[in-house]
Amino acid sequence: MKLSIVVNATPKATPLAADIPLEEATALAAEIGFEGVELAVADPLDVDLTELTQMLESYGLKVPALGTGAAYKEGLSLAHPNDAQRARAIERLKAHVDLGSVLEADVIVGLIRGKMSDGLPYDEAINHIKDGLSHVSTYAKSKNVRILVEPINRYEIDLLNTIGDAYSIASQLDDNVGLLIDTFHMNIEESNLTEPIRKAADRIWHVHIADNTRWAPGFGCLDFQGVINALQDIGYPGYLSAEMMHMPDYETAFRQMFTYMAPLISCG
Amino acid sequence: MKLSIVVNATPKATPLAADIPLEEATALAAEIGFEGVELAVADPLDVDLTELTQMLESYGLKVPALGTGAAYKEGLSLAHPNDAQRARAIERLKAHVDLGSVLEADVIVGLIRGKMSDGLPYDEAINHIKDGLSHVSTYAKSKNVRILVEPINRYEIDLLNTIGDAYSIASQLDDNVGLLIDTFHMNIEESNLTEPIRKAADRIWHVHIADNTRWAPGFGCLDFQGVINALQDIGYPGYLSAEMMHMPDYETAFRQMFTYMAPLISCG
Image 1: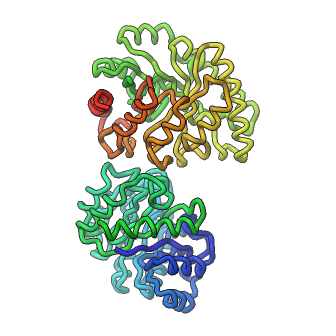
Image 2: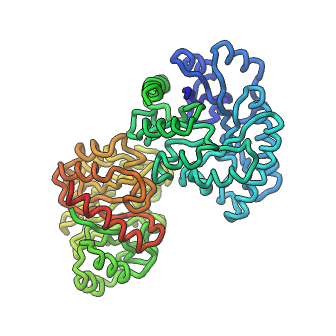
Image 3: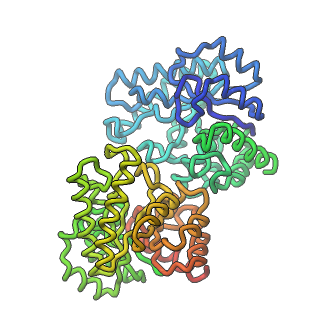
């Protein structure tokens, strides 16, 4: 397993990354010892690809995944009642796939899948989400990119809250659709932190790390060693990527993530 | 420590109690072995006090506390920008104090304290909350009733999320203002489940129980024995009161709460 941290590749794409310029965040991550930076990207067309790839190469960092949640705040949703908005969400995700294809990064479908509160009942919302994921994953397959559905806690979204829910959807789609699991969401939604990992083993392709308070790991009381042991048991080869509040300040949070998690990986 | 469970004394006062008639819930609680029922009450004027006290007496049940959160859904808030709405919230809480005085029950201030998103910045909202609590607690003191401030997680309210926050406010008020702590909220807000209990020991007067998923205890993975041990260490003499989702059904949830918690109390 390798360590990564979420950074904003377009300004303020997520409040769960430091609000600092991309290169500053990347330089700090590289200095501390991270192997990857996960990029939060509102619109991939705003990214200067040449500059980005050169910068990443100069720091020797990979990009395990691209976050897409900022697009939801623009009204893009796979579950939107309006055909045009759903189509816009699919087009945006295809642009993320294009970027992912160059960076060899997976594309995350978190908030952009939409909610029942966008206006449709559960069955219709889910059918639109499946349909949208199917379009995007077919396109992604042609580009050798994987799609990651992220279970998110009940307070942030009103469908696909648990790993079981997301696994059930992913299993009905292409074999390039898997799961991003997040310890903060799991702590609210899962009755057990390890069992769902074992059950969804074949589709867990990315992991977000935050403690129970959403601060850096070790600033709360989650059993990260238990989670890591379960991931080792299923042979998880991927990244543990910090998606967390940058408290008390971003530099402390960056360093805490690395200092706390690196020994747990090697001692597991 | 004694076991209690939240029931609706006015219809649908809270979704975290079974949606069944009060007497049916009370009868089931008594049959299972609970010593108390915590009453969720939207407007105390809708309660038939004679009928209620006779019913409680017939089942031999006490009322540790009264829940008031339903009033927030009517627009009552101690932090409301509008003077009249704040005054209505204070009047409503005084009516709860009157009911509490008869039932020897504490009065909970949870959602009814209001939010910044009601329209005022933090300092003003907090000052109004302190002012409202001061009015209500002075009145309550004359009636021998205690007021319980409940820390609630960040997704449901935007101030007083942690035990430390609530303790800081309570300490500035009358000596009949204390805390209701809730294991579900603690699991999201506290970096440790036992330390905050020790720190706020002198003002912890009531405890809500739910597992990390907000289902009945034992249906998740919270360390309830650790919480109970900490409460025993501080000499907590009060109730552990189930405020939880009634899943998979209310009768299973009632029985699970009692069956799981009773041994932990006696073995602690």
